[in-house]
Figure 1 (cartoon, one colour):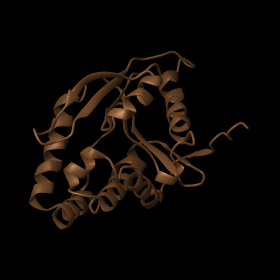
Figure 2 (figure 1 turned 60 degrees about the horizontal axis):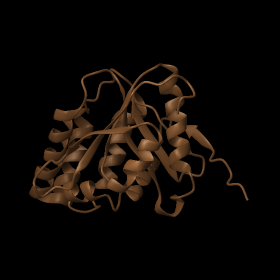
Figure 3 (figure 1 turned 90 degrees about the vertical axis):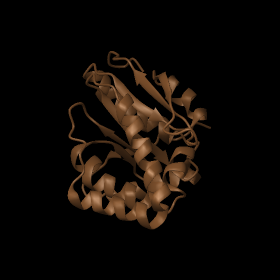
Figure 4 (figure 1 turned 120 degrees about the vertical axis):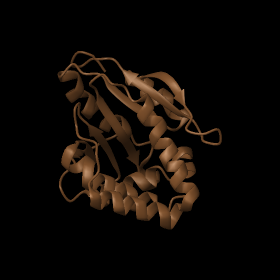
Length: 204
């Protein structure tokens, strides 16, 4: 029996709450997020606000029609700064749910990623996530293929930070290769910086 092809739609204004929920659920067992945020409490307000302030208005991505999975990307040259409201919401969530240690850890991760982020123009995958009950249904692959069609049509490279070692093979399947391992602190779980060279359309 063949699996039905996942149905996707572009993310749109007003999707920030849905996107925050999907990413929070999909990353609830993520080692780097748990270390940075000292648990899952801060994830929902932070990811919801990041989607509202940055990825919906300035980025792009897709969501499954059933609201079970999504992806968030930034195109080359996108302004990645957060507004005052978003900074206050994110800061409040960290203070409330993660405390001083969480603030220190989150800043360490952000700084470590920033130092390693490539200077060459590229598409950046911030997150690709599915709710736990929807994982294994091919949603992640469908989301990735949809974005890479756009990226390959422009002949651009792509970059991401992978926070789960078992996901390296998934990203390699789509042409990403590990550049280096990033560790924000000696007590922090590792991240893998992964880069995908430009390909011609249909070259996934």
